[in-house]
Image (cartoon, rainbow, N blue to C red; front, side, top):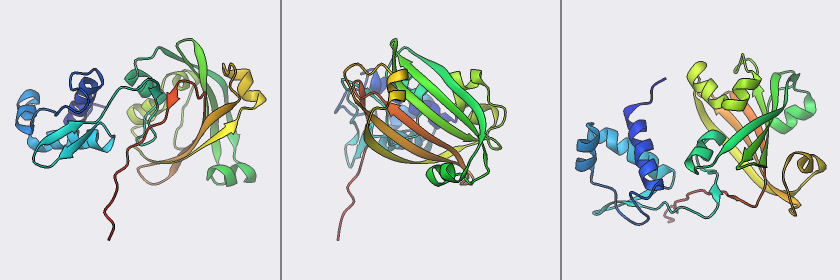
Length: 242
């Protein structure tokens, strides 16, 4: 499925910001300049810039323009604010990565799993565990549950590449909303089995429920992250109070 024009512009501007073509605290070119560069309407440019602002890459300054807020960090950043796949995050951070599927099976949600994940008891689910290897080190263990009727035809090969890409480009479904909770927990024996923990005995844990365009829960995931090389970033705006 081809990207909309504004999305293509957003991705190009984001890449230029990440590469330092538009450095931290500089201003992006004006709307008039960008419409000329990309051969598009002002509304299209505004939608692209809105994407940058929403994800914390830039801020609109009244009377001055759009200022770049992104600054490349010392650690690889996996963003909480947006819905970004591991593959997309790795590409954004210029990391060499591989994914190894260590569990792949069809199950049915029992009462305990339903209470924990939000799926109804009796729902058929794909249970997939994926080990994320960055620069040769196993640093993330993703435990995924996908509703089998909403994500039919999954295979190990798809899971090793990108399930979201399969959902969006092959099944033509829209991934709309994700609710997330982040904690820090002691590492388990299972974590030690799969991850290169070294001297660490704790992990950053993100649990998420993800919903499609109809508001149906399509996924529950627990991502277990080695803390050494990851910074979790979000962008917040303070609202005026009466």
